[in-house]
Image (cartoon, rainbow, N blue to C red; front, side, top):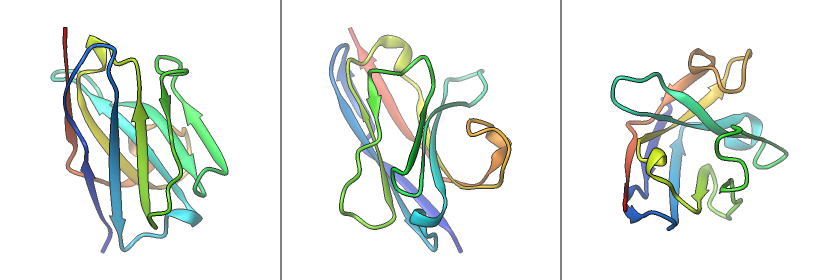
Length: 124
């Protein structure tokens, strides 16, 4: 059974940085994709970044390009999202998705597994 657990969310001042983690169990990250999405209350979940085969292919939403990266660390089956120069509009729940089933890399329905999310708050 695949389980995804996000961590690293919290409160940060505008302009600051956070690194989110997504630890996967029962899932081989290197042979598939993991993606980060975010969702604000009352809004649809939107894709932020995606990483296939541990950095072989990466994708970023236009809204975060230049501020967000997908660092590759040694931890097996763990994905990371490094967020810099955070803005107020980045304050949302962040979710990781795994097992891309095909379609659009940032399609909500194109990932089979989801974590419970981690909350990011940006203060001014």
